Amino acid sequence: MRQKLHIFPETAGMRLARLWRIFTYEPNGCGRPQMTSRLSKDELTQQAYALAVSGFTILPSQADTNLLKELRSCADEALARAAEVEHSSGKLNATNGSAYYKANRCLYCWGDAPLRWLEHENTRALAELTLGEHLLWDMSVLSALPTPSNETRATTSWHRDFNGVFHGAAILSYLWFFLCLDDVTPENGATWIVPGSHHLGTAPEPESCGVWKGDELSNFPSRMQLCGRAGDILVLNPVTIHTSGRNSTSKPRRLLNVGLCNAVVPPLLNHWAIAGASIQQRATPRLRSLLGGDRKQLPDTFNALPRDHQTAPHIDSESEVLR
Ligand SMILES: O=C(O)CCC(=O)C(=O)O
Image 1 (cartoon, protein in one colour):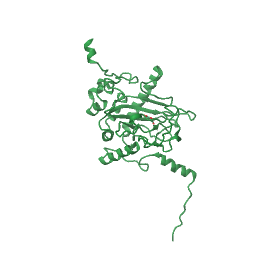
Image 2 (cartoon, helix red, strand yellow):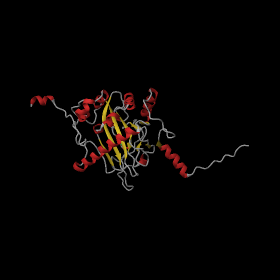
Image 3 (cartoon, rainbow, N blue to C red):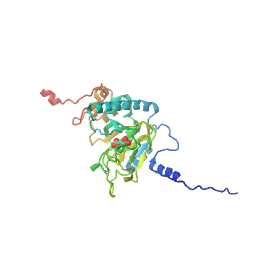
Image 4 (tube, helix red, strand yellow):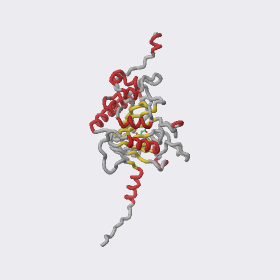
């Protein structure tokens, strides 16, 4: 005898949950993969393709619990120092933020764990495949803080980090590798992106409101949120339109960004000089090439480094001779 099939009509709640899943990307949602070791050549090619067509991809399970613990502790110290600097002198150099969004730069100065993280093999391999020869643009911590529901300036607002000639460029110039230090969810402010917006489009682009001015999510109907577990890397082409999300939980949402740039464009700072002698002396060839050598024309210090950190300021040999 045939069994009677019961088909339940979809309720409004079920429909909402289904639509929410469409706009919320979580890789491997049904069962977490093991900690990933080296990505194979085929896997790297698939990730590079995802980046090329969508402007983002996700590498699940890249950092283990112990490393995450160490990185969180370094990130929190760096954020505490940033708060101190803001309190005393008002602003971090080359860094914007708001009452509910805080950051600090040059994270490689904050301990061994960030230095080890700079050598992460899958980051190197994907960067080599997509950017080719590359440098560290900056290594930063990005913290979306719990925000009251009536606050309008809750997020970075929609933006591209690089525009103009970079928008739609065939050659990739920048790539952000956001390591999730916490589980990143729609509730705690997962980054919103507009997939594919790094391509040069023909349709009129909605006006963005400008950074820290409040954002209108509905301006971009194809937006989606990059969700991940602590230890995943969210890889973003920063030419893609994106904004941090609103954190409506009671804990900060922290990302550790290894921002890389193509070697033909300048990094944000002279990282080699900022790293100072103690890091320079033990730098591996990979770290040495990422930190980019002494770039005289770039700032050789930063105003929210660890208190006892010694940089190696650039010495102009000609002016030394004249003295
Ligand atoms: O913190 C985020 O979710 C976004 C970060 C961001 O907008 C950026 O680094 O340009």
